[in-house]
Length: 283
View 1 (cartoon, rainbow, N blue to C red):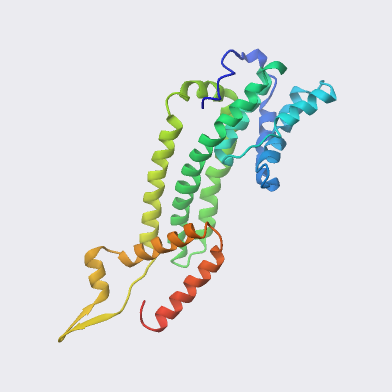
View 2 (cartoon, rainbow, N blue to C red):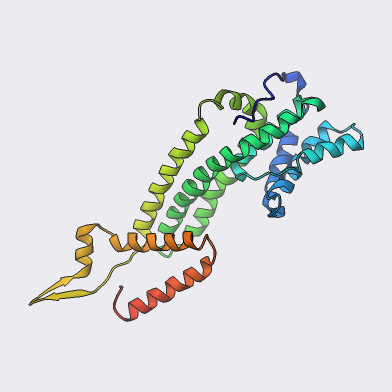
């Protein structure tokens, strides 16, 4: 966060505030469509600029056309972050737009650039790799029993945090975000939270695999007059060992294919399962 340095000498009082809760709520509604204009040249840039329109409309209401255009161009520079925690960037950016003069607008750009990476990692760790698997495991537990409430419950639980966090971070970023950055930029707090979330996410994924993926083999090895079930041998090494090996194999393939051909991979697993079941290799 070495880039976040240029706002330190600028202070905002309550009387300086021009943006209202309504303006921040307009940002919240705009952020819902942030990925609609996603492209591989500037990624989320257009979506970010769209979110900033309510702010610029209010702050540059009486400005000339050239000044308004310059303000919009400021937010058409490259931007890419995780949308939920990136809502904090929107709130902070709105606050900086409000309290900085035209000569100090470099602070807006540098803060946005400095926060993109750390908050992207934090958002992915907390939402994508922790909360989403938790919601998925809860929904899967119902779905495995044939209960239609499973996918509905997953959708509701996930979006309570998904939508709620956007609203919270926009308002918090506007009201407290700049002070929070100043206090935490030397404490590595974002990295610490991200590391903890990664550990929790791995634990959740492990438990989800163990409880929802069921793989066993009916094969039996004949040793003299004795018959030794292969599954028992695996269980003595580690419970759910076949499940673990299969899951690691799928993970390796997904990584090797760089996330491509996932539908083909799912179909291949289904065909593999049918063939192995038909020939009595898996049960």
